[in-house]
Length: 115
Image 1: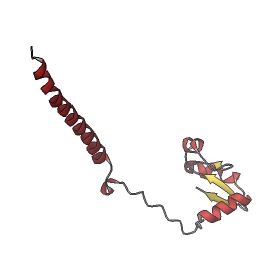
Image 2 (image 1 turned 180 degrees about the vertical axis):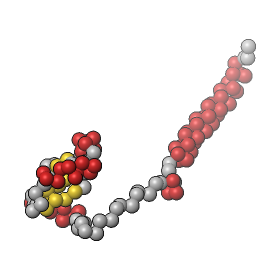
Image 3 (image 1 turned 90 degrees about the horizontal axis):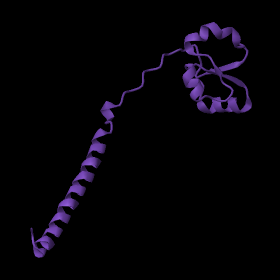
């Protein structure tokens, strides 16, 4: 069994080992977190939108003004799950796959904004 003087010399050594292990652990964790972040080359570009030149595009400010004064009907063409998760208050839910079956529900004299 080590005597008291040997134990007193061992304490600083053990404290350095524990401190070094903590520093290496935190450094490894930080490095691992940094390396898991997606790089610019791994980010997937959004798919290009289909171009419908016969349909006018609406700016966000014009759409917001139409919403505020109630001059447009908003139609959410996402699936029902996305609509239920979040949608513009008062927007109609007509999924894009079903829009041909529901066009008779819309008044063609109204300004219809789809999103």
